[in-house]
Length: 334
Image 1: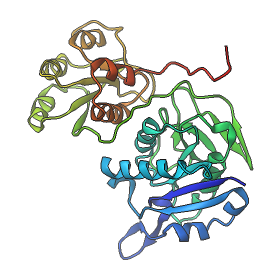
Image 2: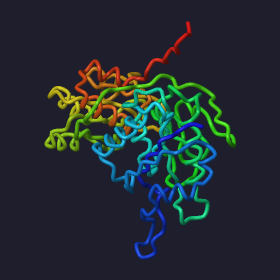
Image 3: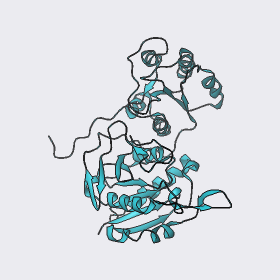
Image 4: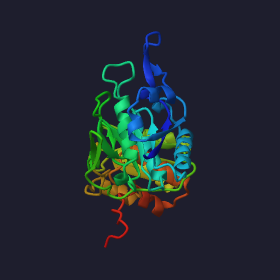
């Protein structure tokens, strides 16, 4: 039987309704969650690691590095076949990508949680935990980096996004789709991931500021943020990479001052590009020196830029990290 390290960090999966507080609050530690999930014993031998009860919206880069180190140390044990991180769903699309960028082992890392608390009807925590452990133990998912598993779907960390505030099926991979799903006790892998980004970082550069282009926006927020001495900016442009020219000019000044600026789209899928050449169009951003983030949306691009800068990458290396990776060739293929 496989041995799986399960790192418990809190989140909705660990919460119950507190009438005096007026809503869900953290309550269930690792032992309590395992007691509610007896089916795990049929799937794998569990090595529980309790990292407290932190709402996902409270995570800092320092906390994420601690969790990543916990996972790395667990996987260094030859007797451990994979790892699961249990956390809140609010920031899974960012944290899973953070772990994915740092994850160098072939052993699977799976992030999961719940959309309903333990005190609500339809509590989905136990089934998600069982599914996540099953995926972490699956030989077919070796070499696939960090994955997100909820509601029976297996998503790659670099594409998955939370699309609805409360729906059970909120997590989707809008660009390339999930890589598989669970059918009862079977892990069905439909495709391999189309390459992965990786970076060796021990710190993240801060602050990296994310801003979104909207109707009637200009560059004043970027200009004001310069006083914070930011490490970088990520701009979510409209459409295929277009903004008001005033926003471009503010970012051009930042680039000329040595501050990297990354351009992506505020659209939930697709990439920013250079198809438009009017002032503020994607082509003019490219000429100004902006870096492009491929299919990464704003929150993920911010994670990549912060870790890339923390690792000391230069402009060429940052561009390579942000760009969509080339598909990896499996050993023995020709």
